[in-house]
Amino acid sequence: MQVDVERYKDALLNIKTAGGQKGFLKSIHYHPYEPTPYEALDSLFAEYELESRDRLVDFGCGKGRLAFYANYLFNAYVTGVEMNEVFYHEAIENRNGYLAKMKKRADKVHFLCCLAEDYPIEPEDNKFYFFNPFTQSIFIKVVNRILESAEKSPRDIDLILYYPSGDYVQFLEYQTSFELVKEVILPGLYEKNANERFLVYRKDV
Image 1: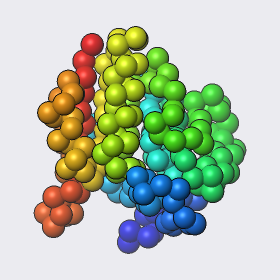
Image 2: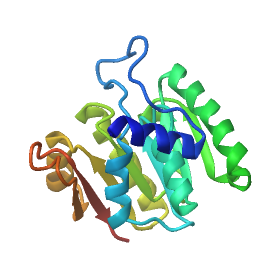
Image 3: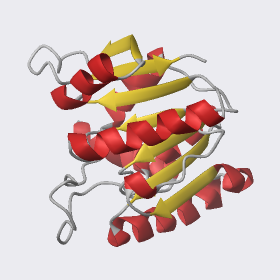
Image 4: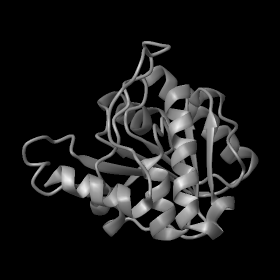
């Protein structure tokens, strides 16, 4: 059933995002690619909606599934950040396929090939998604860059964590001003694995 859902949603978006890691990782600090299951995203977006003016950044975006789905559902601005050149090029191919169907959204869907800690946080970026893409040391660097951006351009900021790492959670709760505002558990999965959930942390202006 899960495979059918994945194929159906990919076909709906005119993209191809199934499959795992190819080639070698450049760093032990970066984790293998695995797309967030569509069923998990449906659970998240049933309880956490975006506005069309929101700007969502997906760190370790892989082939772009989250970015395309968020844009499809909410017409939000989305940026995928991916260090793996193979996945980046696949994301670009998927962008071409997606925009062949969603012709008027080209200005809202973007991808960059760079390390997460090198991504230049834009003043309008206000939602950031993490599916355990890297170790805590990289996460800390990225979050600190987000906080520096928020000091220069004050705005509400959300961090969305799927399958949240204990290291991530500990850092956010004890060493930052982010506060937990929402938990979305995945029915049927959370009971067997407490990591099957989303956590949303927020920093208000």
